[in-house]
Structures are given as C-alpha cells and as structure tokens.
Image (tube, rainbow, N blue to C red; front, top):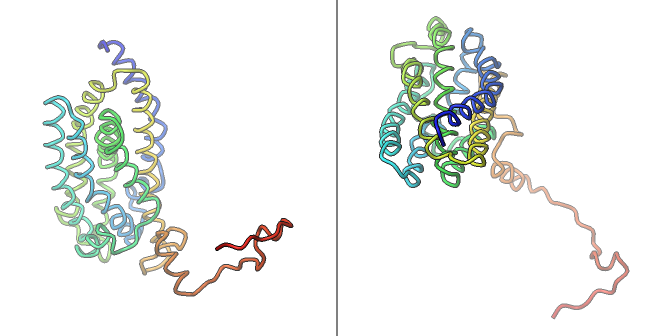
Length: 281
C-alpha cells in the first residue's frame, strides 16, 4: 500500500467515525462532566462501573503481542501495557477522591458487584476483537479508538472535573485528577502510533473496511457504557442498579429464590396433534 492510498484511506476512516466520535464528545455524559452538571453520586456511578474495563485494559493489549509481526508494533504494545497498568491505579485514586473505596472498585473488577449490561458489552467487545480479530482490528479498536477518544475527552472535561472540588464528599487532590491530566497529554501521541501500526497490517480493502467497523463499534459501546454508568445512579443516594441491567445470572437466582414455576400443558404435543403416544422403554 503506497503512501498516497494509505493517506486517502486514513482520511476515509476518520470521516467515517467522526459522527460517532462527536456524538460521544457532545453527549450527555461528556457535557455533564465538562460543565459540572452531574451529581457526585452520578460521578461515583460511572467511575465505579467503568473501572472493571480500565482494570482489564492492559490484558486487552497483551493479546496483541500474540499477533504482532514487527518490532515497532511489539515495542509500542509492551510500553503501552506498562502505562495502562499505572493508569488503572490512577482510576482508583479518582474514585477514592469522589468517596468510593478501593475495595468497592476491586469488587466490581472481580465480579463481586454486578456490572451494568452496557459496560459488560464494552468489555466483551474489546476482549473479542483483541483475541479473535486481526492485529489491525485489535489496534484500531483499542489503541486508536478508545485511547484516541480518551484523549479528546480528557482535554474537554478536565476543568469541569476539577470543579467538583467544592462539592460535599469530594476530595479533589492531584491524585484525583491524575488520570484525566495524564490522558490529556499522552493520548495525543499513542493514537498516532497506533494508526501507523494499523496501516502496516490493514493492507487490503477488505481489512480496511473491517478496521473502520471495529473503531466505530468501540466508540459506540464506550459512549453507551459511560452514559448508562451515570444514569443508573441518578435516582437516590443508594447504589441503584436497574433490574433490567442485572446480569442474567442474578435474575435467574432471584427467580429460583421466589420459586416461580412455568406452567406447561398436561397433554403432550403429540397428543394435541391427534397422534397416539408411543411408550418409551
């Protein structure tokens, strides 16, 4: 793929994902944080719910090492894994500044606390594309799309985020906003490097199309996770998880506990069709 065609395709990619990128940056969650409109409880909600995704992010990147075929890409992934491990700790500091405990966030990461369906969908998607997708799709969905928009988010909301310092229950120190401050800086470079890697591996039109779809899916699911994360905690001072968002296993357990029985017709289906039932030895 020559430089001219590569540049044309990257322009097409950026144009394709721009509406979804803008939707997230101009959406309720991003505007709410940027303008300090979310309540402290809502802030705690999305910070808590999205932490399992942040916690797992270095593991997503590690899957790319299995597929990598060049030293440039390998060095980027290894360095990024190290950085993202530190950023997971920074996310915990952010949550603690808003009144969450470290244990609450760790419980969410290990599955002790229920995770909202939209947040789980984001995690499942990034796991899938990094384990089953191509190298180009994995890097586009993870390091280009997620890290790229994280940088734009950080630059937009950091001042509004810091304005929560005057609200009850918030301790806004340097550690509390370190995640946003760091991403406002370093996520300006990582997506550029990621795109260079994508161009190395997306050398066919079919693969380029798959890359575009993967990047779009990541942005859409990230927006769903963030917006659902804060809205689920909007009602009261208690941690509110809508019944419709509970994991399927939780709902099944509740059904068993209440001993709800399904009613079945007494006659067998064969009998209802007018056929004689055969004895089964």
